[in-house]
Length: 166
Image 1 (cartoon, rainbow, N blue to C red):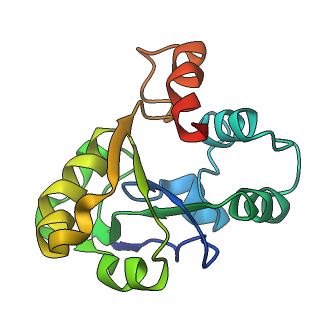
Image 2 (image 1 turned 90 degrees about the horizontal axis):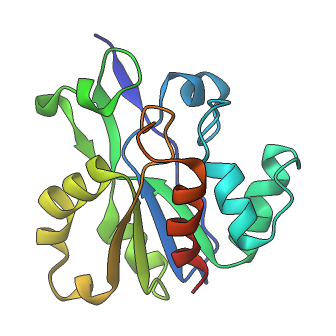
């Protein structure tokens, strides 16, 4: 099992909302793009909620996303994992991203949304205890946009993700 490294955050200095995943999957790592798997609903859902054209090339989608005050990152900066499933992450290999540094550089973050259970669990277990009083922002888990989360329909995911625009 090789060591996988994630991406830097997508965030403007004045970002108000952070969306966290766990760790990029194989398709994303290969493309060097967040949520690059063609069946992952992240960009389709987020673009629909935020009024961004989902057919724009990745760099333009990312720019529009950040211009609206949203930031995107993963809880894990590195780990070992076979395949793309969160369930296959070797728990002993996880390396957490530098959230103290991120929040210091992005002081306007008021809300954190988790794209699924693994992101939330890892954040609450490995990040929140070290942040102390800074964890005063609103933290909420949303249903994973992963194609592996097939028990929830696209319509239900879209409805839940409307929360990021409120």
